[in-house]
Image (cartoon, rainbow, N blue to C red; front, side, top):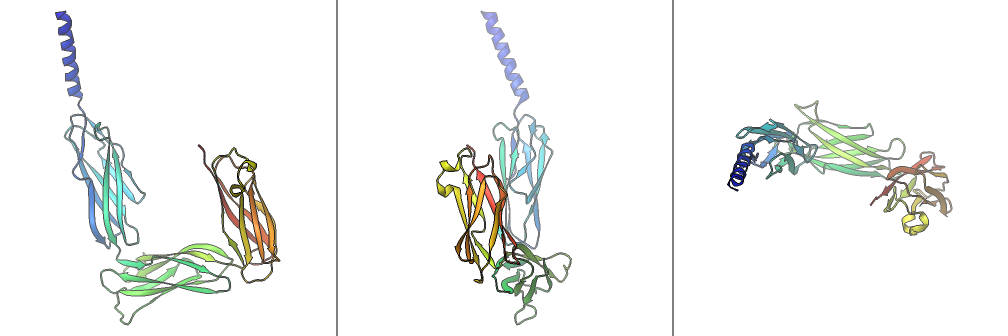
Length: 338
């Protein structure tokens, strides 16, 4: 019995010594929040989170995982013996607009007590050239040849704007600054003009602004989106189905889940004709139903067979309108699988 007790004691002691020898790593950052406060006149901010292995085992750290693509992070080294230190360097792209940002970086390691640490980056950013609003929505109705939109640009350091040119991304987009009474104003109103050119369509464009001392790179930009509307108008302009069970047939589902309708009108009241409706998605049948003698139609789309997975495509039809000979309506059938 004494021999067995002695053997057990020796084995337990050896196990404890081995466990102590192996140890456990412990990741410890000097700070987990990096607050830049109010920042301006820069495109990016950069910093370094410092950390150390405060444990008694080897620390292994995985590549950092930023919460967005605007943040780049690099870690070195990724393996630290007890007492060693490391750094996580980061760069955050601020973008063109005034904003308060809070981004995160996830750091995973073999620390048994804290396997994941979340680092936070904060910044209250004001660009040197502030535009309000920075995005303009412009719908050019049928019968209109131009539309004007306005925004305001301000140099936030109080110095004169010194704008040298404004370039639209397409020839049919022009812009000009309207200065105040003084030539050295730090604020001006900008007029953006969109002209009717080409067929009816949706657009997503921009205006770049250049200033003295920086004529090759824009100091600011204005985003433009909208639609140049034609003689034929649609409501709604897209179709969407949400299918919870792809195995159900149309007969097993309520009509409200099967049918979708698009009202098609003449914008100027002139009669027009529609023909040849078709769908690029198998299982969707379409037909054109006259509602008001050549002025109003209804496009009826019926989902007879749900696809096995989410698909996108369009339904289309031909018209007698020269500027809109064929119109496509975007379609999404979203299939939810349990």
